[in-house]
Amino acid sequence: MAFGAQTWKVEIAPQVAPMIYGAYIDVSNYVDIGSLGSIKIQTEQSDFSVGVAKTSSITLNLKNDTGLFSDERKSDTIFTYKRAGSKVRVSYYEGLEEARYGSAIYGDSTYGGQVSIFTGIISTESPRTDVKTDFLSLSVLGYESIFENTAFSISDVNTTQSVRFIFENILNKPSITSLAVVSVSNFTVGVDFVLDNLDDFEDVDTVDEALKLLLRVSNSILVIQDDTIYISDKEPSTEVLYSFYGQASNLGIENIQDIANDSDGIPRTYNLWRWDPDTVEEGQPLPSPVQNTNSLDKYGLRKQIVGINGITATLERNLILNSYLDEYGVPKQELQLTTPTTSGTVILPLLGKVDIDYPTPLIPFGGGDLPIWGTSSMVWGTFDWSYTLFNYEILQTTKFKIIGIEFKLSKDLVTFNLREI
Image (cartoon, rainbow, N blue to C red):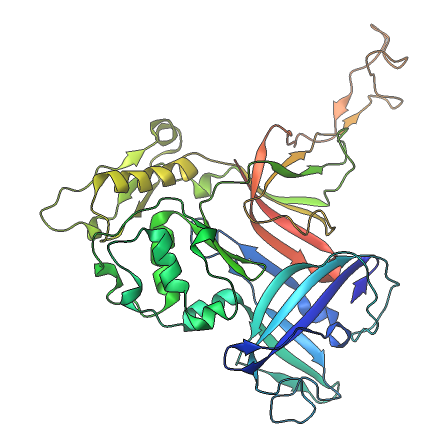
C-alpha cells in the first residue's frame, strides 16, 4: 500500500489455538486505504489524566471476494481457529513505489526498514460485509484493551514487594504475555513504594482497574511498543531526538506543515497537591499539602488530590505529592505540530525530547533585500528596518516532550502533541 515514496503495510497473525498465533500474513493488497483513517496514542487523555497510554482503535476494510477474511466456518479463510482475537499490525516503510489508485491496491515492492506503529486485536463486535463491494469491515482494538477483559487476583499484590514487581505480578497473565513481553526490567516507575495494606484492591476485578490505581499513585505511564510493555515515569529522553524547522528557519530545512492548538498550559496546571483524605484512616493526622507558592499567587489555587489506602508513611506520600507538583505545578506550553511522515519522524516515541526553530519571517520594508549586516543591502543611515510577518515564534532553546502521536495514514502526515519541558 503506497503513497509516493511512503508505504504502509498491514499484516494479520491469525489465532490458531487459544492464545497461540500463527505467522503474520501480509494483507496490504486487500485493504481499503481510506478505512485506516488515523491512529492515535496519547499519555494524557484529557486536561489532566495519567495512566495507560491509550491507542485508538482502527477500522479495517478488507476486500473479501475470495473469502480469505471470513470467519473460521468458511473453508477458504485464513482464520482456522478464530477470527476475533487475531492480531493486526500496521507498519511503515520508506522506499521506491509507483503510485497506485483504487480502494484495493495490488503489488507491494518496497525496500527499507519496517517500523511498527500499531498492533491490535480484532474485536468480537460488529463485523460487517458490504454485499455490493465484497468489503468486510473489522474493528481492531489496541493491545491495551485486553487489560479490561483480564481478571485481577488480589494475590497479585502484597506488602513485601515494591510496586515495580507488583506491576509484573498483575500483568503476568497468559492472555497478556501471549501478546506482549512482560518483564520488570522494563519498568522504571515515577515513585516506587511498598504497600502497607491491600484495602483498595478488595473490590478490584480487572487488570485495567488495578493498573489505573497503581499508575496513578506512582505517577507513571504504561506504553506497549514493539510487542513489549514498558512502564516509566514521565521524564523525557536525555537527548534531543529530532528538530523541527519553520519556514523562516536558518538552521534546517522546513519540515513543519502546521502548528495548532498552542496553549499556555494553564488548563493542566495544578499548584496544590493534597493526599486524598478518604484514604486516611480515622484518627490519623491528615498529611499537609504541597504547593508552589509563586504559581498559586500568579494563577490562583488549582488543586488536585492523589492517594491510596495502602501508603501510610509520610515520606512516601510526600515523594508522590512532590512528583506531581514538579510536573504540573507551573504552566508549560503545549501545542500540536504536524509534519510529513518520514523514516525520522515515524520512530519518535512518546516522551521523546524534541525542539523547534520557528522564527517569524522578516519582510523588507518597501520591498528589496533584507538589510543584513555586512552586505550591500545594509548601508548605515540609508536602510529601512524590516518588519515581522507575524508575532508567533518558538525558539530552539525551548525543549518539548511528546505526549501524544497521531498518524494520518492516507495523508502521510503525523501530528505530535508536545508539552514544554
